[in-house]
Image (cartoon, rainbow, N blue to C red):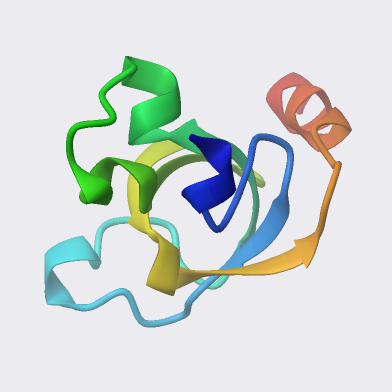
Length: 89
């Protein structure tokens, strides 16, 4: 199912600065690494939305879910090494 997803595990992304009022308590404007989509993590491919929302490991914050694909931008592929680095901090 990953071929229909915009991001995959290990992608380094930036989170939009403005996430809207419903997500104002979520980390914004930070770097993060994609942990997986809802479909990846829960095995539910029945809804297209499940491939467009993502759990992230946010620098200085830890794991947070769910961010829509329009709220994150790709910086670099293959940076899952940062997950371990950020978890240790």
